[in-house]
Image 1 (tube, protein in one colour):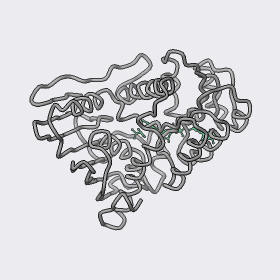
Image 2 (cartoon, rainbow, N blue to C red):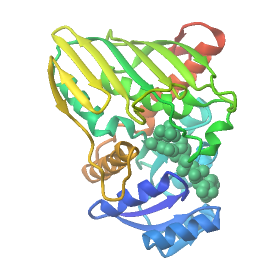
Image 3 (cartoon, rainbow, N blue to C red):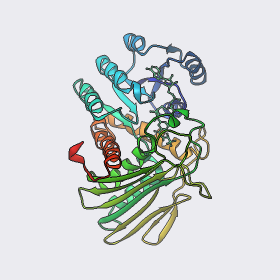
Amino acid sequence: MKIALIGCGFFARNQMHAWAQIDGVELVALCDMDSARLTDAARDFGVTRTYTDAAAMFAEGGFDVVDIATTVHSHRPLVEMAARAGVHVICQKPFALNMADARAMVQAVEATGKTLMIHENFRWQSAIRAAIDALRSGAIGTPFFGRVSFRSGYDVFAGQPYLAEGKRFIIEDLGIHVLDIARALFGDVDRITATTRRINPSINGEDVATMLLAHQGGVTSVVDCSYATQRSPETFPESLLEIDGTEGTLRLDAGYRLTVNGTARDVSPPVLDWAERPWHNIQESVLLIQQHFVDCLRAGREPETSGRDNLQTFGLVEAAYLSATEARTVAMAEI
Ligand code: NAD
Ligand code: 89V
């Protein structure tokens, strides 16, 4: 399976390391408008075909999958270019700038019969996966309450300065992952109520969000996230879980400690040889989601976080901002 990757920035290096580790896959072409970044990545990952213009890369072809690792403004034009080229597509989160763009991108790829997966990797973190597996096995009976919590004071702006600039911040960048974990655990959502705050005065967007979700299956969940929380020890980038079910409880506490009905175990992720703490949790999930994508293509299955599936997660982001702006509960049917 031949892969081309667009956007050789901060996060894409994880994706390149993961491709190098997956059997039967070869990264054959790289593209970035920034020629210095492109040259560095091509040298580090031994890729000879390089392009500063994505259209030129698609015109030459010779790959089965394009992995789009750019920031959100370029997602729609690049996904549509990929659809015209008739290749499978992975696109980083956040999927799009708005629901109309996201829906158009799903339609464009579906019309070609190829697969579109959103790189929504947090549900693939091994600690989260252990919790999902325990819940789905029925270990705590039927869940009726959940909390998915991400609270940190980690300086994310050092590696990703663009995060300080947008009008939207934590829900669009991080909350999107935490909302997707809630969907993976409790299913789709009927309605959502959200509040937001900005605590850090030197950024433009909100850095605290608290959301209440009514899931279709009857679970009520709280999804809370903050990049304004001074805590010790710092837990970045762990998502913590509290789930109550009819037959018991599940907790995923700081330090990757999973407790199901009073029995605790360590579900710490491995530190892959190209990974570094504290990002190793996220880095392992990149390998796992890319392996899942390859497995799905080979088996002819739809990936868990396909473009169509991710309309629900991205819809929750849009609904949360609408709720916070208008100070009301938003039904997902409105989005
Ligand atoms: P970045 O700005 O460091 O890198 C993006 C790169 O894309 C830049 O080098 C830029 O020159 C290039 N680029 C942009 N438009 C292009 C185009 N049309 N053609 C060719 N190159 C183009 O950004 P980043 O921090 O690496 O983030 C990239 C994406 O990854 C974002 O959408 C971000 O939200 C996401 N991200 C995801 C995770 C995760 O865990 N899933 C973590 C961090 C970032
Ligand atoms: O995963 C992400 O999207 C990152 C971070 C963990 C920093 O929020 O931007």
